[in-house]
Image 1: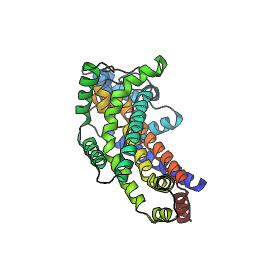
Image 2 (image 1 turned 90 degrees about the vertical axis):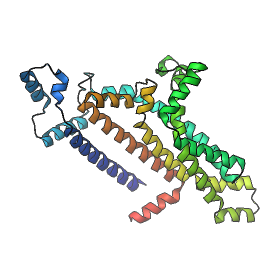
Image 3 (image 1 turned 180 degrees about the vertical axis):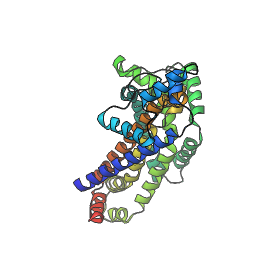
Image 4 (image 1 turned 135 degrees about the horizontal axis):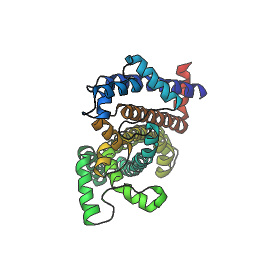
Length: 320
């Protein structure tokens, strides 16, 4: 187990290094002068040249990369040109918003997909199965921006159940915070239902057709006990893996929803960085999101290996 964990950590560090390098090189190729953008078009060439020197933009690209990645390793992620604050501070301020929305949306999606997917597999070709497959198709087809505007009009504007825009921090009350992120979380959850219901349903159908279910029936085990003890345990691996991947994706894929609902999250911060060509901030956001994706993937692998020790045993055998 320890060897597997070390291998995964080394692989994660390699991914972070490659992503940081590619991100730096790609952003370096974007046309425009960062110093000119900071000072404005009316700045004199002397001031622009002085700022370029202060920002290290006159150095070769590899020196710039080493200075940046070295600062990241020391905890200095640079200063945002637009906000005038440390990038790490900005990320820590915005992370609770994005993380709470992503986590709540995945919780909603996992619960709904588990219920619908399992029941659809147990009642194959029944009206309930047709309903689950319909929800599956709609979840993958409906665009999030259209759903967001529809939810705002009906649940926020017409019914008045939720605030239209804005975010209420947890310090002002759990209920108020939950109401402020409910609508964007439901919008994101609907988008995740399509793939999750499909995975749960297919995994459950495969588990129900395995030999161990026939053995359980031959031994006289009640159907409900056999499903809970054998089928669910076998079918849960793929949904857990996919749920972890979807959560990791949501941590960097909330730009549209955060913009529509005016949520001060990382997605909206990234949009501002792109619009204002804040290269330092954009580099930090990409590296931070990649780190979160790698971390969530690592935790998901550990959960899967804990649920099914056979996976851990097989990987250890292969590594030897």
